[in-house]
Image (cartoon, rainbow, N blue to C red; front, side, top):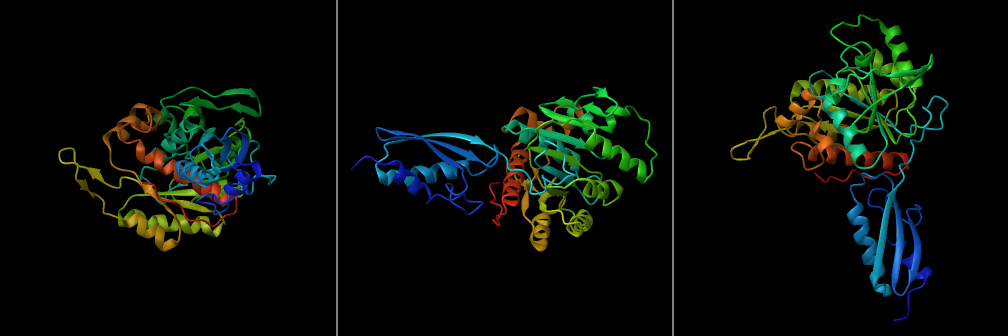
Length: 358
């Protein structure tokens, strides 16, 4: 068999599709043939996120496509470039922030902040630049969950440096108003502090800025939507019917203001019995998935009831910070991959379904 040519290799790669975007990797600009000699092809593959859930599938398809050409060895180097949200060129967009993602819930007590914190850390651990904006002004629990009480530094009257914890840049009212003093504020004051967090904090270059919203559909959520273009929203619920009733309101709110629903996360989904490992559905089963399907939005995954998740939040040591194999962390990493994949699909204008890997 004659030695494969560069043209033949590129042509073969046109038969490899990104499973989410349903376009070939050559047209998407995802692959570059760096070298071809002595039957060895060296390729650089640029994924749409370091958290790509389908990297192994793409690698397998590339090798299968080149094998019939007589390529004896395929050397693959993977890197990633997160696409910016389609509204990032908007004048109201935050400089340097590619994707602003809201994490919301219809009611309190569903573990929204736990999901936001562990989602941000998981995305960061997988190679992305991540920030976390604690927009829950009345109940700013992010500093506790990240184990920091550091005071943000002001470079001047209009520039604040965020605090960094576990590789994530963070700002929170809990750092500026520590202790048990309550904030008794009306809507305009809430809008003002949110604007400062958005405009005066020097976020730098971020792939994802996760905004932990207060529960419900009140002033802060509306101020965020009206102030900056959101790449999408993640809705957190539990399997209980009461929680789901309020989640429907949150979904409808984001739809009315034309914010993409990236999907639904079902927190406190089940408990694995410590004695027999049997699944125990304490709050019900499958309601989050059914609700997502009913609204025509993706179901991003289930977060189990795991004592280490609670302990990590209370002690400022989130489970995602200790790697994917740590107790309770795997489901957060799975959800992070789904969120990153959904953002890539939305930003690149494709209409592909979310791929379940849980």
